[in-house]
Image (tube, rainbow, N blue to C red; front, side, top):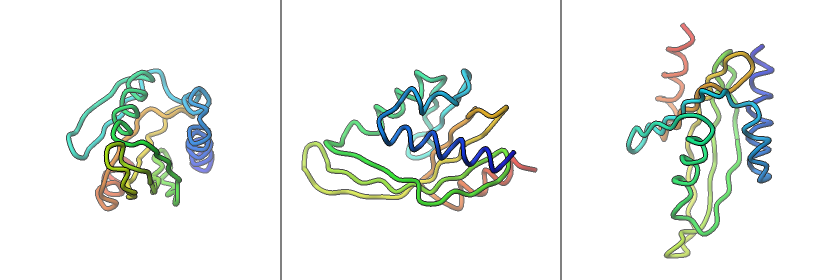
Length: 131
């Protein structure tokens, strides 16, 4: 099942990148829980919570894009290295960075999304949940 989980996550991220939000959320579990671990530990619930998280994430950008550079298959967990880039809304300065997403899968759906700034922490957390 884990290869399928990676495919589900990849397809969802690709749909989101194309602007197909409904397609991206098609595999979201209705009880989806999203946690932004850095900088504040904010938790968002459901599909509407995901949309609020995303709106908050890109609020300070005039342009923003991302790509999933690496997918780590951990069975019911999929860790994705994300590259993001854009321009600051106020300054117009080009900015880029890396972050990691940990997708927790249940019944072929994304039940949990955790966002980390630190790769080791993302992999450690996903690995602990696999035991």
